Amino acid sequence: MTCLDNATKEQLASLCKEKEIPVLWEEPMKHYTSFQIGGPASAVCIPKNREQLSCLLSFLRKMQINHWFVGNGSNLLISDEGLKGVVILLDSDFDEEILISNTILEAPAGKKLSSVCAAACRAELTGLEFAWGIPGSVGGAVYMNAGAYGGEMKDRLIWVEYLDLDGNIQRVPAEKLNLSYRHSCFMEQEYQGVCIIRAAFSLEKGEQAAIQAEMDRIIGQRKEKQPLDLPSAGSTFKRPQGAYAAQLIDQCGLRGFTVGGAQVSTKHTGFVVNIGGATCQDVLELARQVKECVKEKTGFELEMEVRLLP
Image 1 (cartoon, helix red, strand yellow):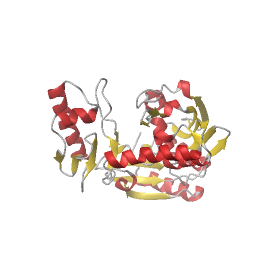
Image 2: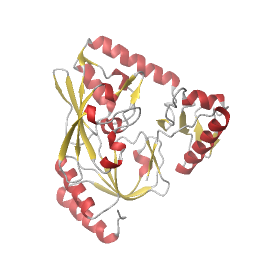
Image 3: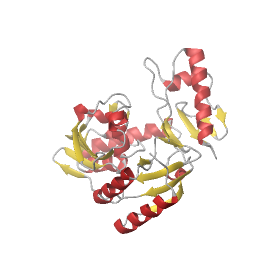
Image 4: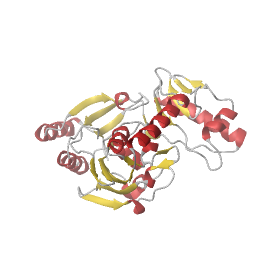
């Protein structure tokens, strides 16, 4: 893969104009991540439908241009130098809707989980309450098998549709997605470069009042325990087998530990927060020191849950 030179940039601009694909040049990625960290991408393209997405991907692959998919940006840490290539932003404006048939809910990758959970509640469907408050999109949640409060995407997924490297739409049943703790097949080499576009979930009939009450309970716990008032990427470290990352970090006396503008949250030590002007390097250095300290004092090795680009 290559960077975006001036000649290729002109060709990309021409394609986006012809296909009416919105494009932003040298766009700071801090505007597209919940961490509010990240240097400029050479271009941010925002396809609004499958045809635009397919044409854009075909061009980028033919020209061998570096490209990345970004949804709600809630589990991303992007380099201070930015991304020398094209970011494909799949957001809630992508022209596909949430569809509900009986107890099956289908949602496009760019839809926020909050919108999907709210739609399920309105339809009196239970099973996705655990995802209420997870600050991500459907595509990102499937990609990392997101979960909280005893539930995970894999508990409800039926199938996922993605655009393969040849531009064809593939539908894969959940049992073939290799879903495990914060992992799916889309993280594996075989699936590198494919684009998740839609997912279906199996739910059950329930009472709207009870569903809403459970969602209210969960969001109440989030507000009480998590530093939602500061930019972060959610849980920074994966849960090590046999322990909890936050407890280990707290045991090591790292609550409030700070590097530059990055800080181990004083409210929930499983979160690294941006207390103002944090850089990618601040976060990485803080994480390195936290992992080193936890390893030395407890023997546990912490692994980053946050995805680093590039």
